[in-house]
Image 1 (cartoon, helix red, strand yellow):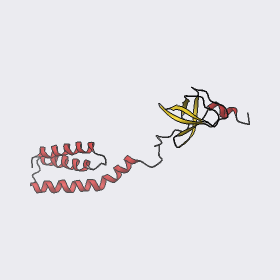
Image 2 (cartoon, one colour):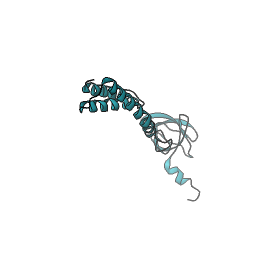
Image 3 (cartoon, one colour):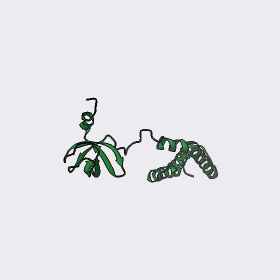
Image 4 (cartoon, one colour):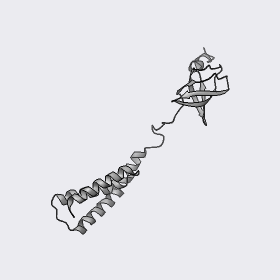
Length: 153
């Protein structure tokens, strides 16, 4: 086969890899590129030899490197991947919320149901700290309230 066909197939497989998830076509692309480079460098091989080299190289690369790459991409569970953690964030009340009552608060540009877990009523526009999340309801408290309700003070 002509060397540049292997290079063209390799780049086509790289494009296919970018369009699909799973790190699968990458190894076939690398194999095609390597065979193209070897054939282009002047190593004379019959077509069946090129196809055999492509197949063996693809399978070896797939078996050796796919597992470690997938593990690296996924990472370890619980290791710095707390993107959706809302605890300790600051929410702003959108309406007055009495103690223990549920009202509306804004957090990250979204309106949430919010329960006042503090000991004082909250007015509209008050910045509050999220203590925990119960389903789709934020449990909030005014941050300076924790200090003023401490019996040691």
